[in-house]
Length: 140
Image (cartoon, helix red, strand yellow):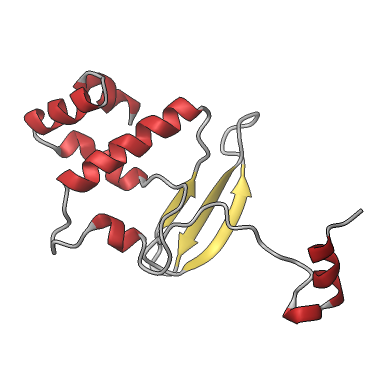
């Protein structure tokens, strides 16, 4: 038996549309996405979303395999946000949340900047994550 709300959508009542999207993740790329493709980069592995933008950038949205990895990268991103500012001094979180707050996405570009930090900054962040700096650098 369909839910009552689904019947309303099917009838077009209350300006409802028959096809609705469920927002499970939100992330501002910074450019207009012109192409979006769901594909498996390696046969037998999880599918990923590959996108391209109007300026020629190519990006990939990859699902985490385990919750431990998701927790680790969420915490790494949180520490890097407080450590790294961009060239014009803009807050990273406000950029990625330009139109709608970031939800359930970790910024791989930001996490890749861990290796560009000074050794003391890497050590400080790694200690807060209960890892060595070499473990943290390998994980990213």
